[in-house]
Length: 181
Image (cartoon, rainbow, N blue to C red):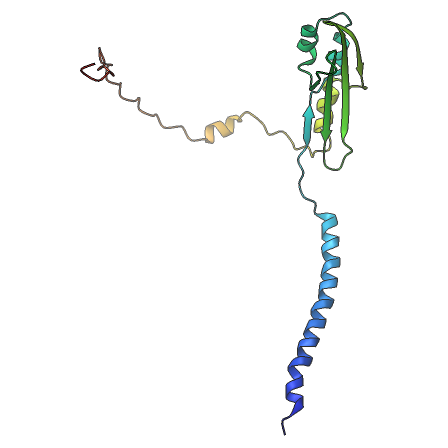
């Protein structure tokens, strides 16, 4: 008569190992969630559209031509056949960890002359550049010049011999047309 305990041992052992592995998976899942809160993927800053500074809007005055407005504000991001007398300048800036920024400037024309300009509150160019750099870790700027000690310690570059002069160009070139034509 065969011994039934020998046949049950692998089955019981398999069940025990499977149960232990399933228990480990749930604790690993908790650990991975804790790690995911610390480590985040890199997302680059996204800048889209036409940035229009406060200084530019202050220069634009009613009565200016379309060409003059385009010179100051740039080419509009949105123009429409259905709204031929309206130019839209839209700017969006998205950075990881901050709310997206959106600004809009709309120019309304009557014929070729600017009638009015509607704009969201706009930053100056200096404020905008400062906002681009905010949120980044600042590092000390490395010195751009070598000290006297560094200059004396650096090796003197070897003199490279001048290349040999090229042979003179021929006085005439052969014809590119086949002979006999």
